[in-house]
Image (cartoon, rainbow, N blue to C red; front, side, top):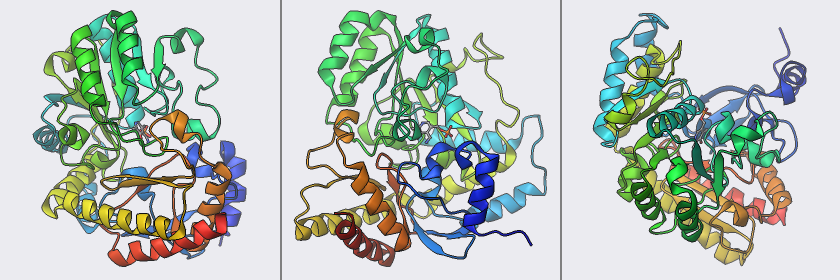
Length: 429
Ligand code: PMP
């Protein structure tokens, strides 16, 4: 039988894939060392191919708020799979999931299903340009909206840790149309709109940026952006790929009571299978082909398995009161970690949390933007990460990513994690 140890698979993978991976942040490049290969997962645990368990705080980068291999998703998939894996014509599960999304997110009047957050964000930008007849878009430094050309400018996530927030291969002529501002800086936003507001088709933002660590919006900031967009007839796009169905059933827009013109959903809506969506005002969505003149398409869009998994996950979250559980777990973890930091007299760590998202920055300064996040000590993070990993705790392998809690994390898991963090803080000093 083939050698399935993580060490051997890594050797083979490096021959097969650029950097050994099919998505950069999986490579451990930001923390050093080799990634492990997952054999299977259940609840809050991932097992590698050597049989070693890890308490998982990545949870497929936020796609799995109920944890891995949830029985509700498994049974929905079993039911769907015997009926066929892809049809190439419309299927009833697309309608069901779309109705569920629309009932949860009132700003979504119409929507289009896609297969990834990248596709949805790319389409949102094209649609906003087509609808407004303007070319410029505004994004914020450190926000990640997938890897389409217009949005891979000062981007977060893997683009950040690999030192390439501005990718090679993006024509300058296109990147020039993407204006980038610092997050949480209302004065910069106002000044830009005063100068160029009438040329900006859309503002795209993560309402709680979670791709440069976690950067919660300061009070009033999102409202101010909404007002500027209204005044200058610029569309406001909320990229809720992470926050959608996570902060509440209605996402960040429900939590902050702001109605965007367009919303991007991903991750949770696919239940761990490839699905995403782009939704919003009817008059805008009607500009999409075949009804309108803005083209977009997808062979696997609305895939019946992905729809079944997404629907099962969302229905189960509602049934089991997942948001309340996630908030309680988040609060518990926060108070334990803050206690620990106090006990240890750690002044060089900033803990951030909102709902089931949290992160630690290794800096003694408050963090509210990409610039302030970049002050963190990457070497200490790498030591911290590896200490946790040795203790069987898997945090995202980058100082600029966010940890995800799931309802499968137990209080005992959190306690074990805090003990491990104590040790990792000690070892990383
Ligand atoms: N937007 C946000 C906020 C994301 O976090 C991500 C991926 N992590 C994307 C867009 C891109 O989604 P995908 O990886 O499905 O293309």
